[in-house]
Length: 358
Ligand code: ATP
Ligand code: MG
Ligand code: FE
Image (cartoon, rainbow, N blue to C red; front, top):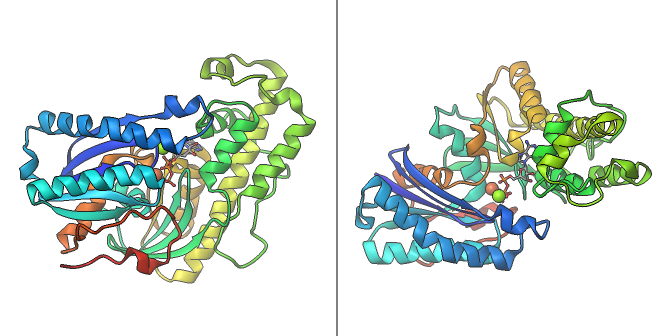
């Protein structure tokens, strides 16, 4: 079965083709440089860029693999969560393709796709506990199979990636700054007393990262010398030396530690609640963070779980994960009608995600 995946939920336009779970090829165009000028994603620009770039990426993918559009069996598209205008570009393109070729349509939950992505490189063992830590979401799920997800906890305010990016912005690192906080933090030991591990003094499985970001902002307010005067490019960060670098590295390490420990506490709490699980899946852009990876390795070992982490390239948005998740749904008989809608919000009630078995 040939499944095309289309991803336009945020600032990456991507397409990929999967044949029975095996990746045949993919194309991706990122808009990061455009949005970096504004310090964050500008929705209006994002949707215009998707509209401009998507047909070309699709044509290039078809040409490279050497198949015709009418050979595609299923068109899988990220239907949400994400920016509505951006999602609509992908969903409209998918519908047009289905109308013209007779392929079946399947709307994919972008977050489920992030979590299933490691399945492209190897088997995932179910049931699994899933931790999705991305730019817009921090969710935990019990995952019974590739098509059965039960939401356990979610962020009440900032997502983990958002907290990384906002902290990075405090220092005037370029957008998205998570990876610079990670890289600098690797040079120092964390001060575990410096920042709180937010929202753990309760029995909730939910997250709240906005207070942690405020704690870093308050600290930076009394240490303004740590901040770059204007937006630093990666070379300027690399060139930073002396005591300022050491101090900045310690702040980054401490922030990394607070985030990773908070995730650990909530994941262990979730594991206790959901009963036996075989694996722990950690996905989304923040799954690229070295401290998060290391910490989750420890959690998996302590609980006798197999740890499933996507390769770094599969952590952030891509078309392969959408095609793969779509194939998982299609092969057990699911498809959507052409009335499929885009759903921008991430914590929609599960019923909103009901898929029609036709
Ligand atoms: P969503 O899937 O919730 O709609 P998104 O797809 O935009 O959001 P991703 O592409 O999965 O999010 O992840 C991007 C986020 O990951 C950014 O916030 C970025 O700063 C963060 N990130 C990437 N690498 C690292 C790293 N090494 N350490 C910390 N954060 C990182
Ligand atoms: Mg992105
Ligand atoms: Fe994403």
